[in-house]
Length: 194
Image 1: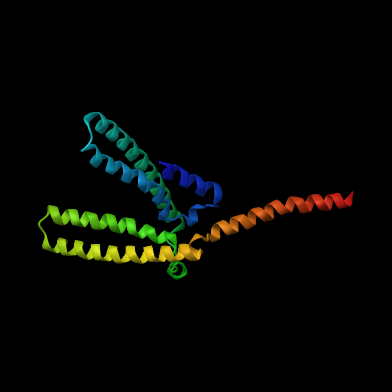
Image 2: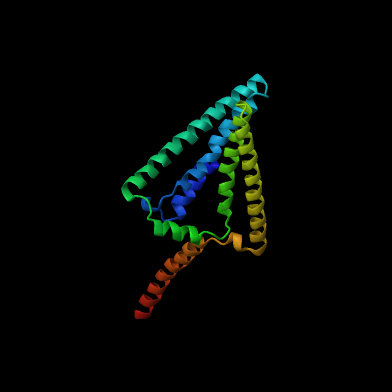
């Protein structure tokens, strides 16, 4: 729940957001509450009846919060796509080229691939399908390769310090320093006039 409410609060407080530049990434802070809710049903199966009941109630509450917030964000995103349309191909290509350097955001690819892989494994086990079993093995191999690559890049970026550089925070800090400096200049000018 902290991520579902805390990260959007930080986004709204520290960043200058407008609907035209909204992305589907706004859904990412909401995902942990839905995942925790789904996990609660599995965990409740091995608990005592009293604890299982409490776990299920909390899971349903988390699910309701997560789904409610995700419907709001999806409605906003649909509105953004309707009013401001899709970005043109030139902008999308520039963004893809610009974001080729490894960043902490690449871990965002791991979770959906892992969920998709787990679903394919489960589907292959439920339906006796050799094709799905081979597809699941391919997904596992792909997931391991991507995970190892991102993990190595994360460790290298952490050791070099480039992983922790946030241009948006640097811009915000410099803007705050400029805003703080303006009143000092005005007061010194008005003081020199007296």
